[in-house]
Length: 263
Image (cartoon, rainbow, N blue to C red; front, side, top):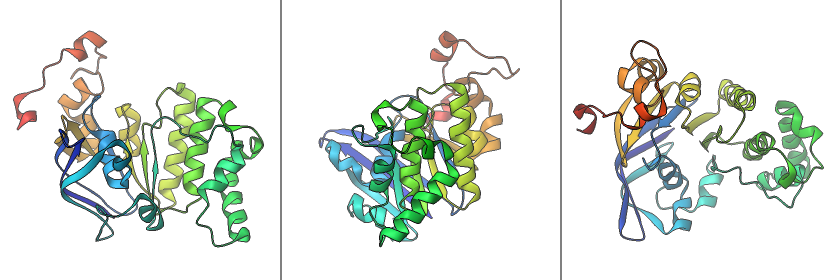
């Protein structure tokens, strides 16, 4: 479905943020991108969706292909028309509009009013709490409700693939479970997903495959089971020792990655 080959991204013609990223996402699968702050996770998604241009960034090397067709030189709107939607970090709802108005914006590609209504009904079926909030101003929704709304808004485009950035950020544990249960349902319905998530544990429970980024490079990849059982990933990204004990923040912060990670 998606293939990145040796992709480089530069900001302001000075800062090299991605340094040769190569990854693949198979149709119908979920792939997780893991890593610490500043690793290049969000930049990778923005490069794929072409929204990087709004931040004075551009792809300066490599190729990005969706279903075998290059998309690294097309506009964000063209990428949406090709079936890919980017749910950005920070729950970017249209705050002054109602829940339903936000959803209607997501369905702007619907060919007519009847189809738009069917799309709305489908979102309300899958996310029933949004039906109860349809007339509520989006800016007054809770963080979890806003996260559900932006996922629902992405569903309105009937995407083949969703890029989603930090869906659990700032949410209570119960709401994190609800959000990832929704993503799991979309996955079972055949929606391909590329997920950036700092909560590595929940990300690997959802994903089939994962990539670990550090300083703009892929330093490790494998199936979700392989990464979850990898000693380095467990200790540095999951906060667990090899014996299964949780490490404290200071220990994780000062953990020295093995030299083989930096090859």
